[in-house]
Length: 469
Image (cartoon, rainbow, N blue to C red; front, side, top):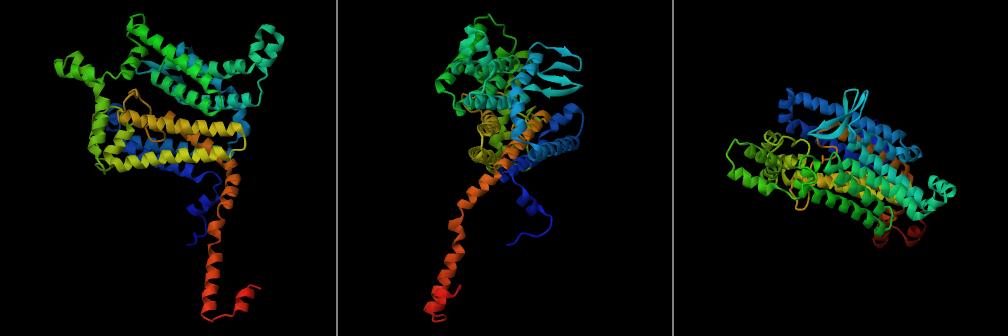
């Protein structure tokens, strides 16, 4: 069937030179976000004293900005200016993290807190969720560092080694990896840990996985991972021994990692209703138990859009527990759709990385794809209360409510599409090489038709042989 002529969606998609699957995944996730945020935010509306129409209108504006970000980066984005910026991303990350760690007040830029933890920077009154930006910036920095290391292009360490004999080790491969790759990973992870254990776990894991994919020796990676584990154990035993006070992020980390839900359940059963212990245990169980109830009540087909009941009891179901909410309203069918969308992104990201002409682009695509899909699957694992997964909050990319997260992931999709646009010609050549078996269908069909006519005496053998002449 011919596609209609004129300006329509088919013509736009035909002219689109990026990866169409990645584009459709982004647009579908945005559509799901608008519907889900509108339906899941009665408690947020009550807290802010507004109606859900206002929340949906706000979300539509955010989606509109996100679409613009994707379009802008798709059209104007290029590795020609991604790479120079990537070199500065580590220093940008550290600047943001230092402001948080030391609670700096620098005029219109000030460190801020959410739920008792320093995670945001206030800029002209607006909130910048630092970890959302740091995880993307560090993917870019490590892509630059891995690419430069592969090309033996580090110059600063070589100059220092030439000037100072005692620093010769800096110019060695091990010295360059330590200075440009391992130290930034440790510094960023350590600074993030001061404000959010879950973000430190996730960002550190993504960075280690990225350098593993990037070709760094697994023995070196094991050493870095081992060092991080040792530091975590020192914090843990210091906490248990009373050296580190119970207040602070370390107490929260221990509670989440070792899953104190059973202890909280016992407190809820034995404590007097209305007591402080009872209320604390109830609040601790409200989110994970409510999320599991949402999944159980959703069943196969769900309660229908707007039919959720747990959205009235789980405080942040529109953020950290969005996957549970989607299952409650759309059932296992909705869950499968979400999972397939992120698996599609993973598959297409892999294909785009394979077709990239330079190593830097490959690592950027791989890193960003792992970042998005990794956060999505971690969000799902927390929602279903998967064993050995710390019960910690991570939003569902491009679906959960949250302006900073939404716009950052919009930028990620825009970057992926801009790089896929650069590899589009190569992908088209590969697709063309894979089509002859299908393309010959008409030729084979014509031959069979001629043979049938020959057998029926409708044409002579000579006509069949030279008919095309």
